[in-house]
Image (cartoon, rainbow, N blue to C red):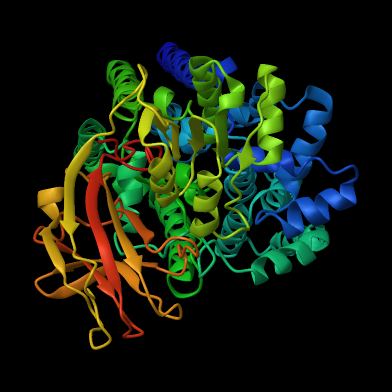
Length: 635
C-alpha cells in the first residue's frame, strides 16, 4: 500500500512538472519577440513621473481605471530592470506559472490529485491563461493573489490543525489586501470570499475572522479616495466609452472563447465531464460543499459584473472574470474520482495536446498576439521607407502617441518624421484632413490605424496602394500618386456607380428623402469583415443646408441599424461639389440572425432645401480578418 501511494505521488509530481514545462514553453515562446499591447504601453507612459505623488495622482487616479498596485510595482520594477518587454513581462509570466501550482494545490485539497492535474493542464494550455500571463497588466497577478488568498482562507477554515490558524489568517489578510490594490474586481472577489467565510466560521474563532476583515479594510483606507474617484467616472462604456453593453448570450461567448472556439476543445470538455459523472456517480455528494462554494463564487462575480454592465455602465470583459476562472475549472471537473496511473497520464497528455494544438493552429496565438498595433505601425513604416528609398518624398500619418514612437525609435535605433493622428481626445475632422492631404507635395503616403473614411480621402489623391498590412486592431497602408512596380490591388467585392444629371435639382425643397437604392446584403457582402464604402458629390446652393448621406439596414421592413455622414463635416468652401464619404464595417452585425437583410442608400434632406448630386458610388472592400482575432473566432 505504501509503495502504491509513493508511486502515485511520484507520478503526480512528474505530471505536474510536465504541465509546468509545457506552460513555460508556451509562455516563453519567442520571448525576445513578445510585444507590448496598447494597455501595457499606456501603463509604461504613466511611469514617467519623477515622484510617487504624481504617479499616484496623474498616473493612476486621473488617467487610469485600475487601483495603484500594479502601476506602482511597474514604476519601481523598471527603475531596476529597465523597460524592455522581456524585463517588464517576466514577473507576470511567473505569476501565471505559479498560479498553476497554487490552483493544483487547492484542487487537490478540495477534491483529489486527478482533478488537480486536469485543472492544471487546462490552465497550462488555454489561450486565456497563456495570453494574460504574457501581458503586464493586473489580470494574471490578480488571479495569482486571489488563489493565494483562497489557499490561506481554505486552510484557516478547513485545516484541522488549530495551531496554524493564526498563520493562515495573516496570509489571508495579506493576500486579500494585495487583491484590493491589484484590481477592483479582484477586490470584489476577495469580498465575496470573505462573505462566504461567515457561513463556515466556528464560534470560537469568529472574533479573529471579523477582526481580519476590519484589518483588510483599514489597510485599504489609503486607496479609498482613488476608488471613489474612479468609481464616479462609471465604466468603460456610456456615451464616451468604447465598451458595449453585454448581450444576453455573453456568458456563452465567454465559454466559447476560453475553449478556443474549437470543436475539439468542446468535445474534450464534454467527454471528460460525462466520464467524470458516470464513473464517480456514487461519490458525487462527498465534496458537495466545495462545488457549492466554487459555483457561488463564479455566479456572484459574473452576475454583479453582468447586471451592472446591463443597467448602469458597461464594465464586463473576458479579462475581469479571470480572478474566479480557476474555480470554474475546479467546479466543472470536480466530479472526477482518483484515476488510475494510466488514465491519469493519458488524460493529462490529451488535454495538453488538444489545448496546445488548438492554441497554435486554431487560435494562431503566436501569429496574432505577437503582432501588436503600435509596434507593427513602426515596423511597417520602416519596410515602406526602405521600399520607397526616399524619406523626403513621403507623407506619414500614424496613430502613434509620442511615448510609443519614442520607445520604438530607441528600440530599433531608427526614427522618421510623422504626423500624429490623435484619436484619444480630438474628434475626427474630415474637412481639415482632406485639406491636409490636398496640400501634400509628396508622391507617397504612409498611414496606420486611421478611420476608414480618412483612407478613402487619402485615395482621392493617392489612388494606388503599394502595401497593406493587417493584424490585431491594426491596418497599415502605403499609397502612391502614380502607378509603379510596387502597386497592389485592393480587393473590391462589389462596385456600383450611379450617374446623375446635376443640371437639374436632384432633391428640391419639397423632398426630405432622396431616391433609395436597395441591395440584398448577402449579394454584396462576402463576409462580416467586408467594409461598405459610399460616397456622393453633393452641392447645396443654400449654405445653411446640411444633407446627410445615409446607409440603413433593414429586414422585412423592420429597421435594424442606421449610419449617416453629414455634409457639413466635409463641406468645401472652394469646390462647387463636396465629396461626402460614409465607410462602415459590419463586424458586429448578426448575419445569421438576419439572413434576408437589405442595405439601403439615400440622401436625407432634413432642412428640405435644394440639393444637387453629381456622383454616387457604392463599393465593398475586403476588410481586416484579424482585427479582433484575440477575442473572436478567426475566419
